[in-house]
Image (cartoon, rainbow, N blue to C red; front, side, top):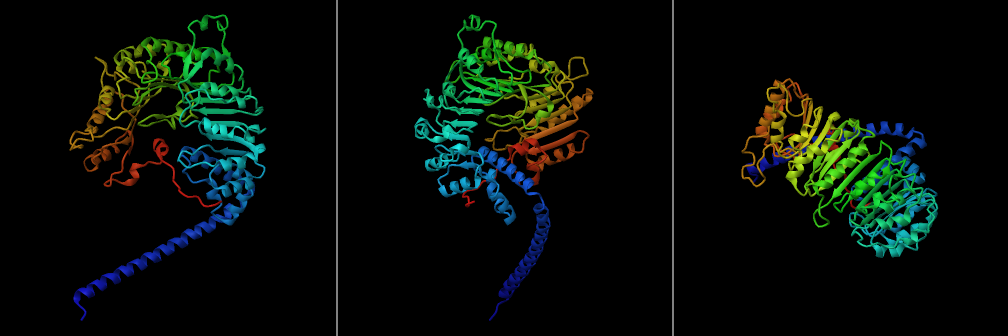
Length: 593
């Protein structure tokens, strides 16, 4: 006999079935609408001239290759997109050789052969070595297969140790007449000079770019050619003799980008010797210069002092002393470096803004940027600073392991005094160790936009609202109109605290600062909180909703997702910082092309 509960269960099931059928019908209508939109779009794409569509595909492939490099080879390749949409796209892609010219030496020989065939006569950019950044092995057989096409090879990107170098020394691609770029990364860093002499006798008539990472500086000498426009040798604390490199650089008149890392050494009497007295090396085409001194000395400042380059050249001096490498810079070294920079800045003293940052290694970076438009893309991360290299920084100085933090803080205003900080309009600061002291703030009276990166900005906010004695104006940054706080903790308790939201929030500090500046007739016009952490949304929500109704422009983003908060508020696609922090899609197995 059928029981009452069985009837109830059947009724529930029938209702669920009816609901699912309604959902299926609704989804079917949605699919029909999407298909209609796609069909309407396809003819428009098909009507594009093949040359324009091929150019679009080529730009997509270039962007895809860059993304794969940044994401360790994990982003979806462009050829997978353009060959899997429709027959028209696939036919056009297969008939465009340049789309298949970027080839990785993976073990799938069939894939490599397909790329070689489809690239036809196009110049080849090959990537090989021991393994990629994701640990996937490269194939020596694939590299040998590509070497058969050595006359077409334009770019060679390799990674591997000296043992790998011996395996490829005899491959014919080193004789490629069209070779323009050589890039080699030694993952484990080669501590002793490695024999690259076999490259010295190669013609390399069109070589433009040499990038060596993890090699001693001397390894790059056999590759120097007068045609070079880009030279980068990084990754080791090996000796770089300043007099010798001055002579070498003098033979590179077309050089546009120079990046050297090492222990810059210079005989104390070399500057007064007849060879160098009153002489300098001219690099008339140089646009970017980066010198990292890992010895804790000032050799790179000496090299900078004897280089003549255009006033618009972007310069970054870095001094990595201390730790296990060498004794850190002395305070007298700092004075020497700053005086060198001041002399170099005399040619172009009108610099719009200045940036002082530091990271977890107690590295202090003094960054002079060229113009406000280049602020887009500047981002501070927790471990290291990620600078967009296309931005135009005029001077950058980096220091690590400051020997006497208290003395350095006291002398910092004096170090800044020769530099043109009074004209600064935009300032980026990171203050984790108190390096940006009040004396330093006074050097920037005309700052209108300030970006401050700190987990605990309460003391800094108090300074912004502090009044000069007997004067109705702020003591610091009186012209400030826009303030951005990066990575602030809204509640300041540590993660280990059993009640992390029990203390007062940062809201009271922000309110006091805003009220104080308004009472002094110096109100803020814009407040931006980026990547706010440790928010108790039910408690803090009223403040965020209230301040958004005030006259100043207010925007904010959060660092972590809170299920009680709208998910869209954790990522703001109009925020340049958010867009740069977003990752790339991953893929595992690639289908055949």
